[in-house]
Amino acid sequence: MNVISYRKKSYSAPEGWHECTPAQRGSLIAFARLPEADRTDDIVQMAAQIWLQVPDREWQRWRLDAHQWATLQAGFAWIWEPPTTRPFESFVHEGDTYHVFDEDFSDTKALDLTMALMEYMAFAQPTVPDLSAYGRILATLCRPARVDLEHFRRSDDWDGDVREPYNELRAVDRARKLVSLPEPIKLALFDYFERSAHQFLLHYERLFGGSSTEEPRYPDGRGWLMLLKNVAKDGHFGDFDRVGRQPAHLVYAALLDDVLTNDEITNPTDHE
Image (cartoon, rainbow, N blue to C red; front, side, top):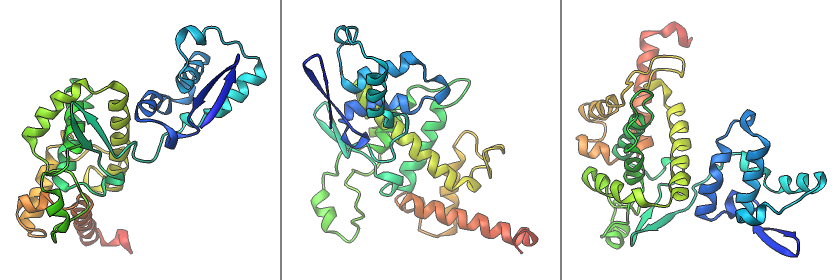
């Protein structure tokens, strides 16, 4: 931790994202999302105040010369770069412990991620965004532990995911409860999801329109469920229920392989 002394008072501040509390991360994450062109002097000062957690009245009395201000800014320069790791493994809200999905969706099932991405499409819809989808995204991917966790750990089906199986009705119900989750926590989680989703979609972009410059193959997201149904029809992993319970990357990698294989067959000259 950084210890900053000013007028005989010391302030402790994190040296990086790894030292932030969940609330600090959520409070600072907006600065990492801000384009450099929008980084005004007022915003930099706001970032410094939040980083140091200095109350408004105290901050108004701070007077730094150019050298002191430059030194202070160097201490929180890292906030302008987005974090790349999971913000926290779990959080507690209204007596329930929610476990946060792992990095790169490595512990997430195909159906869970597909539903979360569909909710994200609804939330990000440019003309009529569904703001309630915000909570459903979090409730879909952040869930309490399974009630049979100890038995599950000892079974042959153990896959490292401690969360209870996804259930749409429970997700809707918990999304309502998560409305009262402190805003910094929600922001930290949503930013983590959005960055993870962006990387996932880039990796499998051939399934969703080919590139960011082309019209998406399934603009409303519902076609992703059709993709899972097609996998079930092909019998790769079993029926639709079994497909949905497979690791997300396994199912989408199989889909991508089919697309690339079909592309090689239909356009052989492009691959010579």
